[in-house]
Amino acid sequence: MKLTRNFCIIAHIDHGKSTLADRLLEYTGTLSDRQQQDQVLDDMDLERERGITIKSHAIQMTYESGGETYKLNLIDTPGHVDFSYEVSRSIAACEGALLIIDATQGIQAQTISNLYLALEHDLEIIPVMNKMDMDNAMPEEVEEQIIDLIGCKPEDIIRASGKSGQGVDEILDAIIHRIPPPQGDPEAPLQALIFDSVFNSFRGIIAYFRIMNGQIRKGDFVKFFATGKEYNADEIGVLKLTQQPRDILSAGDVGYIISGIKTSREVKVGDTITHVKRPCESAISGFTNVKPMVYAGIYPVDADDYEELRASMEKLQLNDASLVFEPESSAALGFGFRCGFLGLLHMEIIQERLDREFDMDVITTVPNVSYKAHTTKGEIIDVHNPSGLPPANYIDFIEEPYIQAQIISKSEYIGTVMNLCIGKRGTLKNQVYLTSDRVELTMELPLGEIVFDFYDKLKSISKGYASFDYHVSGYQPAKLVRLDILLNSEPVDALSTLIHNDNAYDFGKRMCSKLKELIPRQQFDIAIQAAIGAKIIARETVKAVRKDVTAKCYGGDITRKRKLLEKQKKGKKRMRQVGNVEIPQSAFLAVLKLD
Image 1 (cartoon, one colour):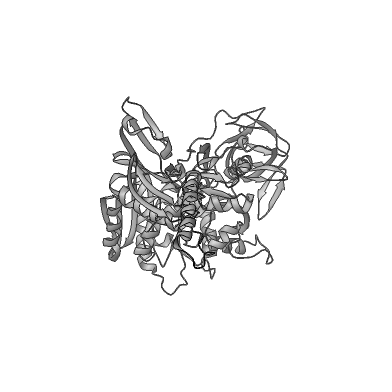
Image 2: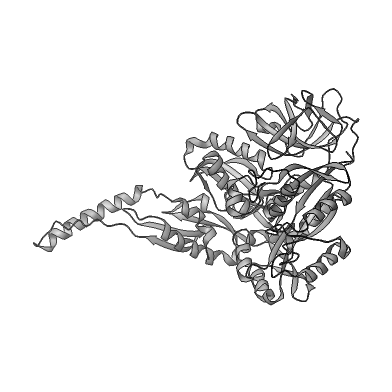
């Protein structure tokens, strides 16, 4: 155990975590030249295409120093706020963290929130200033920011470059000398924390764990604490670039276990593995359940695929424990699932992964957040879906979730950033100048207002400089109304939204005109209406496609033409009564694209 080090890499988006991890793997000789490629740990196509890390990835390296061979377990983590649950799980399996800060950008919002996550677990922090080879690096300014944030000495900060490999040897020495070896008793009863799992169609479910106490051998009879299920450890091993089997793993090791588990409900991230004969007394604590921020319905395009979609979602949940879902049904779309996501990017990634990994065609409804409706009888109802809202005459008041948001930006953009937040019903709580030209704003905003396009707008008005991080601060009463969209007087429940009273008219009007563009013309008029209760607040009409019935009348009396037109009018009237409107999928996502 003295020669083992467990550490993770944390940083804001795009500060060079995966590139630096590549250099560490190269320097320690973990990869052969043939295996070497950029972002080697990002094994999903999506991660490579977008250049972001979505999953945390564990890998073991060996490094010789001072005549000893050290075993280094590295976990590379995502930087986006939507995947912060991945970071919290990785941190629970480590004793130290490399805090990477981009020398060209300085400290940003996610840097701070990930740092606090690491400090809560008492990790040893090694600050690394990355991208030192860039022409626009500002080492002196960034160094001051780091010293202000962590309170370290200037010589503690390692100057490195993931691209050129500068400072990699210093980082490895710091990991060995500054990060403490894992604590734990190899003789105690087995206690191992599951921090991730994946589904393999040949081997069943593979769980990744970190052993806190005790030892595990191949073929041991083990049980999972939360589910109480018992299994044989068919194969255990360590995670190199591929899985490498071992006969025994001891306290402080990070590895995987294959025990032929078939159903995904039997493995929970954060669960504890122990021996059946000599169990540990308690499960490992300190693992919180995830709280979804955004809810949306996911429905199969073909109703027959419902069971297949359920199986796909369960397999996906194994690999992404922050996905929460429950069955629901909609009058417009049939059976599907109500899913909870950590943000809009998370929702988009899940949709992409369902399509790529499981070949599922799905329709996603308008995302919304959960509200609390207080009824006149004094009951409190959690509303995840506008159709679950009780009738208006039974509602006393509705509370909506508020967030505390930290926005770090250059001081020249402070006015436009404030305007954006105030336009979203935000209030300014605090304003701190971190340096002469960098400001941290603390705003209180309704979560429902930032769900759609807030982050995109923030990035565009600040030319990509502003960084954004948030946590839910509580619920506050709000004047919310349910806005329904009616097509030919039939409400489409998948397009309903809960919206603030002041924005309802404007939103309803824009929604109707957007749908008018997207819904294809039929043989009859289609009325698109926005309504609050029984009150219609906006209307657009998709005009009928008219067949030219008079084309065959050449010359002759006008009454011949009129007779055909009257006949057509009667037919149209008859059609309107039975006309069904087909809504394209783009209409469901139109709400997101409203400017």
